[in-house]
Amino acid sequence: MAFHSAVPNAVGHLGSLLEAFLPWIGLAVPVLLVLALLRRSATALVSLLLPAVVWASLFGGSLFPQDGGAHDITAVQHNVSDENTDPVGTAEALIKAAPELIALEELTPSVLPLYETALAADYPHHAVEGTVGLWSAYPLSDVRLLDIKPKGIAEGWSRGLRAEARTPRGEIAVYVAHLPSVRVRPSGFDTDWRDESAALLGTAIAAEERDRVILLGDLNSTADDRGLAPVTSHMTSQARDLAFSWPVSFPVSRIDHVLTRSAVVTDMRTLPATGSDHLPVAAGIRLAR
Image (tube, rainbow, N blue to C red; front, side, top):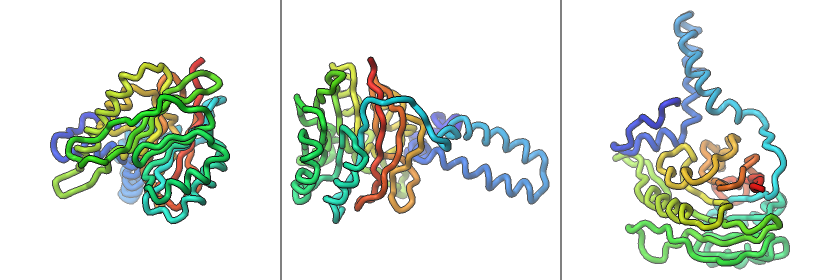
């Protein structure tokens, strides 16, 4: 847990696989505790203190309610799933969180008009590129496609956009991205396309001229995964709330993200389940003065 970055990634991307589920390594502690008690081993009990303290220092704070102070904007990130049979109900569930920004992924041509109609009254400004979209209570400008397509994927794959939101505190660059999926195969953890797409996204953010940036997206791994370093190295760390968002049946990982630059994510929480295989996540954001 403490030295996960030292686990090599050269063979099967084992380091990335470990980092995708890093908090769960702590489950070894209670298992070993039971074994130590059964063996009545004082040495084993004492030795368990180290991993317990390491886990508590890394993730313990996320078990308690976080109070990051007041926020200026609420943003919602949700992969709505291209198999979602209730897009209208999904939109209505997101509106209940009263966010100023909503990012959606896996929008299909058949359901896009349903989302547009359901969100129009509360979010008069929106932009869609390919299968990702941004709905905003603030006016949007300079909307453009964000090219994060890996070379090996066929033409027509479009999962990124960039826009500017005119908020009461000034212009903010807002990015919406859906990185390629990863797979566990006999050869290991297949992240090549995801990593290539993350590098393209990181390059775009590094070149962004606006100081304040909000990134909303399904990045298909956790912020601890070194494969996302090209992105996370340019952004402010997230709030420490675990807010696991996937899969909806038993969430074990937060692969849906709200990341910022020159702003602070004050809190992160999941919203009730929709018709998607992801839970929506909502984040409070305090803008730099």
